[in-house]
Length: 544
Image (cartoon, rainbow, N blue to C red; front, top):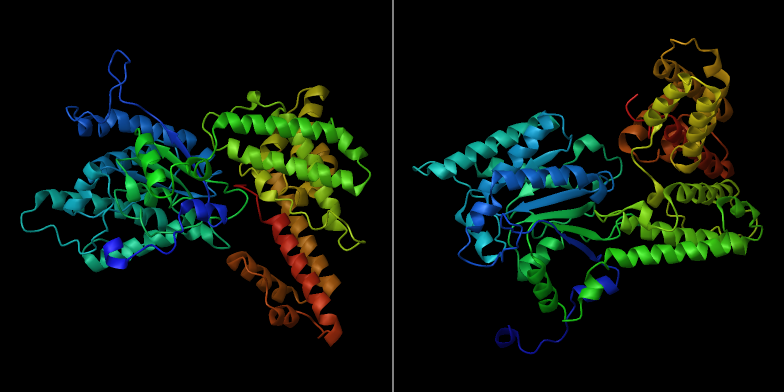
């Protein structure tokens, strides 16, 4: 390089990008070591070992697939993010894919797994040298007596048929053009979470590859790379870097899970492409350090409010701000901790229920600020509450309905009180359920006592919910002087696109044209009510 271009004028390496908040750090875990039957470790680099036979053994791959099924939701925040899974060869990929497919058919998981690979020689040889080769889209036709390639083409064609069944598409790999079209569609689905209005059934959860997508592909909502192949130098950094594009508070790092001992290769690559002391900048700190940091924040939080109930006694805004900022520090640290496979609540100085109780108080302050905007110069107004960090995807209305069924079947007053208390706590703690809290409480207090013992709570609730939604729509039309059909059209468009209604569409739904000076506040109020209505009656409902 120096001979071609002369003296280097400037370097901008990964440590600089992390310092500038342009990319994230990596959290790297190494799982599985080569062992003899007596339990002693084997050096993976010894050339006399038949490494391919070991690494591609179906039993080993089966265990790794089970591990991924058990831990994928933790790594991807309940599939808010997508993952890449790179393996050593197409033979290994076939074994992996068919293990995932079989376990899905057996009902062990519902992960949406897809794959793409070529049939070229470098797709097979890359694992030997640790480099990543560029994909060749001129895949030929598997003819000319090339039986191995024809076999792999048939396998990929079968997997593309699975893809078509999963997503309702009509892709093929009959020639290079069709293959490239399939490649672009896979890339689009891997990026689907990047866009507003993402529908989970439209996205790929895990993409199995050998070399493809490990260089040049960027998706902000890809946060995890599973690795079962040899990587080194720039190929390693390139592959790892698929995961560390910045996005939001939830995506605190790129997760790398290695099923081979790549620590030496990782250390070498990090030093080579930054500097010898770069690990502290590039890699997430050890698990134990985040435990200590969280516990330090707990101690400092106790100094502000030693119990969740004590938060109610924080009168001054200065004290409330201190609580909000300290609890937010705890949330950020917990967000990182939860990405570690070994995370356990019992190692923290604050238990899960205590954390949830403090979270409820945190949300109470958020609600007060949100409901009373502009009332004087509040120092809390400008605080980013980072609500993304405290959402749990599994807690939705369907989940609450299961608890309501238990409430209806309670055999004693104590059991009834206990279940009702847990429901009320969840409604207070989960930010996305708070808009539904009043309606659900009314259902519990005013309607459930009238049900017979054999009443089906889910059916009763759906009827109640539908009636309440209709009442809310009627009130919106009456309050704002809007045509019902036009409002229904606005709602359909908003639900489909996720984009706010246009000003002209909103005004077109009004029975009377507003005065010029009244248009802005009317438009903002109506849009806010439409969004609130969808949030209350549509979002986070689960499968009712």
